[in-house]
Image (cartoon, rainbow, N blue to C red; front, top):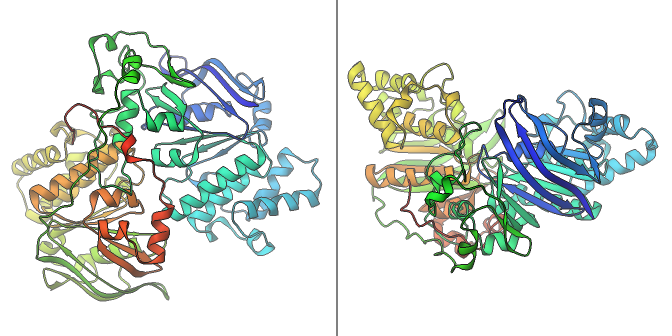
Length: 602
């Protein structure tokens, strides 16, 4: 039974004729999970919100229909939409804090849904439904748990509570907007399994919005690939991953790391065009490896290339009929790691208040080496990284740089040592002042560390921006004028301008599109090759570890449980915890991901 039918959906910017979403069509059957993927700015979340009869601020639905169980919700009044949302169509945001009231206990928030949407349900049945749903999402259902506040839960528990809030009223449709972004692999696996089981058990039609192709391969039944407001390819999971046709789909897959194989990641050149700046014809043609002159003017309609497999490309038929493109190139392990130890941590214990977070942690980092640090959320990865850089102060043990003891506090360390070891935050907003231009942000360390004259600093800023593949003219821009990938490159430039020997990268790609992630990884590898940088790479993405790292350390509850060369640990893990992490990592077959024919882009 079809639960959702979207036909000719058009959303524009407040009636200005600038389409954010253009002519989107799809259906979702009851119990089916439909994956919606694409880079940031492709219109994914805007389409998801349309299933709730909503549009983002400054936008409105101007065409098409959205049928939920046969009822067109486009044009419904505020009261009707309020009744619809939560009871018939539920929404799970990326950030649980958007769905949870920090001032209310969990039980109160769950009961409020019945008060608002299903008051006719007797109190006893409400309570039983709530407790059943909590058990279904893998949470405790006793009174003690229901009496908790959101801040008393872990990140994974908070995300599962948002699933409980979404499913407790047994909606017909659920929209999931990147609900596993930022979660560690074991928590992510639990959340994905929960979504799959609940949708099947209650026959809920789900739209899963994400930029993570591996997650979609693991969860969804069918997939839509969006670019610049349009669906460019759609089909069953096996069709899209085994025989992708559209050059954009192929390029996305070529940028995805896999845990079973060390791969050369290929970034897509350029950026997704914003509404109002999208080119004529196929919007992807300026970035496309298969573009021909006709692509710039063609009027594109979906072309069926298989049963239920459609592609919006004028070259769809020859591409579909042709031989499979070359499989993703494997990358050889690095052989030029230095023998000299730059950074050494010896028997480190760290505390938050009276609670011990790190237990007897020791590690070495050599020049040109990338050492990955993996583990579940809360295992102590970031505490270790912040202790090394001097931002976490409650610890004992030794931290040495080139055999010189590093003071506990960063401000107590010599300037030369602070310059040599730099930290890149997960969110670039933590290292970029929104009131300063990029040039002003990069100029500050040059002044503090090197007392560099203005003219020389300006030249150094331009050179550093070029090193991270940004135009020198970007020095006059502010952070809010940049894309997510550009901001992360500026954060890397902020560290590089100090001429470091060690970079500590704390989950720096966790929220990035796969193509942007690929470009950042290639940039880091190039900097290692050219400048001998050593990297401590903190992440929960084991697939990325296979591509970027030379050695890996697995942490559990503040202890190092396994360490070794990446290929040894990921191919032959010995510790049960490492085995659990690898088993929980979503993956698709690497051989199905083709490499674009253009030369690689860094």
